[in-house]
Image (spheres, helix red, strand yellow):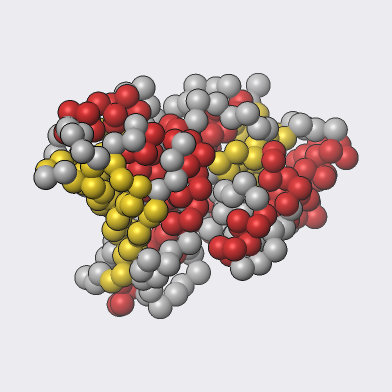
Length: 349
């Protein structure tokens, strides 16, 4: 029998992608989509691209969620940073009252740090459920053989690209720990609420940096990279807003340690991702259109004069969020890691 799935914060871009993926998942079925702001509205009225999948399905309020938690279920939290932890705690309390086992994958930043103090230093606010932090692990599925906790936090979209590039360099001790990265993201990375930086006349045919060397994903990446590789990098990251809706293109550069060859670098990436179904090494610099709409990431490497450049492309809403969350849920339930995620991207968007 399929496992019921609950989506919290279900009306944003990431949640829309998650609902799209779950619609074709062989093991999960959507039991409840929780949205306080859209409670009572049909799912297809908020996400017209899902028209016909659940004609009578409506968003429910948090107060209506208890009915869905009468049975064991998978919970995906797409709620905003700072709100997700409290919602997760509430769900676990309701499930405990009903005696139902739930496994949670959180897509916000609330369960990406090992301690409440580390989270609070970056986000400037108290953590909503610090007692739950030991029950979550956070890493890309490619960097952790299995979860040793009942729940998982998924790294952020830029963080996913940064970790794919940095972990092999650190794990195999090939490069200096000072890493420089520049990345460009699509406008969906800013969320569904309109902002000056996502307004079409300002974003179209434009390119600009934001929060240079101060982006909150940097300390997240440093902590997670150290946890999975044994080395803590010093990340100098400059993000950019690109003139497209979805996707991330990232370039990371570092100085190689003496006598490290190009073959050694490529071997490290091949060993890291040779068995990873969604990460592919390419001979030429990767292109966004080859991955957008899919859960795949493409990586290429250039080495010259004692320095290395790593190029990563992925879809910020799929591999960097909803798809990565489903990948973790597949792991938590012992399903094939690729279940529900094998559809290729459309390419010619």
